[in-house]
Amino acid sequence: MKLPAIFLLTALNLLSAREITFSELKESALHSSHRLNLRSIDTKIEEARLESIYSTLYPQLSLGYSGEYNHNLDPKSSGSISVGDTTINSTIPYEHSVALRLNYELYHFGSTLKQIEVGEKEIALKKLDQCNEEIKLYRELLEHYVRAQRAQSEKAFKSHYAHTHSRTLQSQTASLQCRQRIPRFGRG
Image (cartoon, rainbow, N blue to C red; front, side):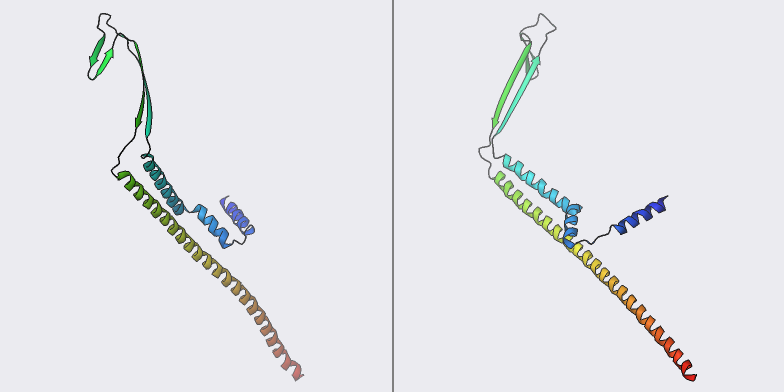
C-alpha cells in the first residue's frame, strides 16, 4: 500500500515541477528560517525590555480596594482586639477601604539612563546579529542555488553530448556499412 502512494506522490511532484527564481527561493527561505526567526524574537524581547526601562521614568499610579466583614462571637468583648500588628474593631462589622497611591522617583542617580543606554546598545547588537544571520542564510542559499544551476547545466550538456554522440555513432556505423558494401560491388 505504501509503495503505490510514494510512487503517486513522486509522480505528482515531477508533473508539477516548475522553475523557481532566486528571488522566490530567497523570499521562501526568509520566511521559513528558524534561526532568523529566533534572532527576530531576541530583538523584540530586547525592545520590550527597553520599553519597561522607559516606563520607570514615568510616575506609577496604583489603586487598591479592601472589603472586610468582622463578626464577634463573644458579645461581652470590648470595642477593639489587637492581634499582632493588626487591630480589629469589633463594633463595626463591615470595613471597606480604598487606597490610591502615586509613586515617582525624583532622582535616579543616573542608573535608569544608564540602563536605557545599555538597552539601546543591546537592541543595536541584536539587529546586527539578525542582519548577519540573514546574510549567512543568503550565502548558503546562493551556494545551493549555484550548485543546482551547475547540475542543471551539466545535465543539459550531457544530454546534448549523448544525443550528438549517438548521432555521430549512427553516422559512423552507416559509413562503415557503406565501406563494407563498396568492395563487394566492385568485385562484381
